Image (cartoon, rainbow, N blue to C red; front, side):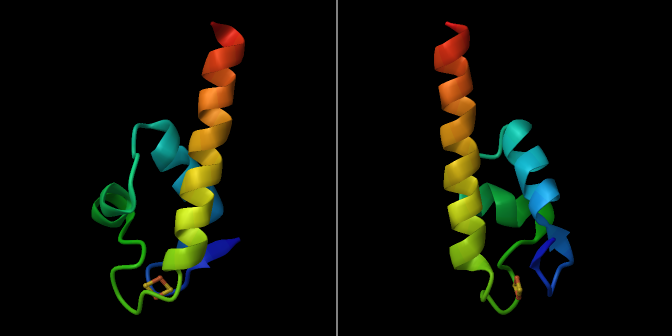
Length: 64
Ligand code: FES
């Protein structure tokens, strides 16, 4: 599903970028261009970023 229409960025690309070390909206913007044009996707992209980071840290806790 497209999160950012302007840049054609999907939810999967955001998850992958977070998995590869993106930890902030600034990094996502630099890497994928998310929210760099109209900014309408910023709220949802941030939500996805937070959710993906939370799931990732839960996974780390479970593995520890
Ligand atoms: S929809 Fe993402 S910048 Fe416009």
